[in-house]
Length: 400
Image (cartoon, rainbow, N blue to C red; front, side, top):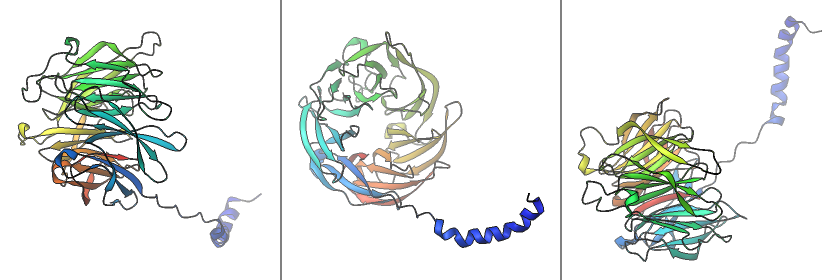
């Protein structure tokens, strides 16, 4: 039996022998992540950009290549991806033209080459589509038509294309509420986003025109929507609900309001009943401003909201103040501002995390650029912009 003293005296010799033989057992150095493909939807109505552009982003260095045209298509203001099937995915783009002929286009995405091939085009069931989403099963897709005041659901066919609209709802119906008090922006209903709940059972619609959120039950087999009971959650008059972000806990929902530049903290509740499923949102009366105290509210519109995957930080963008704002999420779900940083351009309509969550790409619509920011995952703060890349009128960025 080896005594403690004998072990301690023999340890240096053991350590030396381990050091001598260690090179045989050295692990291979980790391979840097390859460049990640980025698709950029642009505003073709301005006469410069032509459709969806493609660039490569290196998550190790934070470098974005200069975007090149991937495919021409009319005003692809919002993009969504289907889940991977047999090595291929579909990319969906709303064609946000402000008339009833607006469409949703399906592209086949070759995962190896990144080539987009147009496969089909279907009606968006309303003018000016602003948002498209897909459930995690890849069975259903949803569109919000901002100008037309409607939403639509679709079944995703085996080849990735969209069916004709399965369900459509006209938000001019009285059950969806009445328009808000801002005449220039709330002259009628304006559904701005259609977000699928984390369990794929419900759809939440933000209506900027009617200052309300509505909830629908999703039939994932058919794509059919059924209004939930209660249907509406009203928010402050004139706030203009735009987008929401679910916290990773599945219980907290953060609503960014475009017109009064605020973020509201809501609680999400859903029953587990298979026979009579219900879901609704409750306002916690916790609201924060996205703009600085001295900035004129009428000179800004809030745009995007996202939450880090660890649930500790929330990010928002301001068009007018032209900033990205970082909030820490407290134990009770309330928000505390920790940073306000210039976006490096004008009109940051959309931003997104890269797959490592070490970087944020921010599309600056009115300065024809995408700016790159490094993100500290420990404290949530941003540094940059570390790079500015030219691209005309970026509306949306999607990693694929």
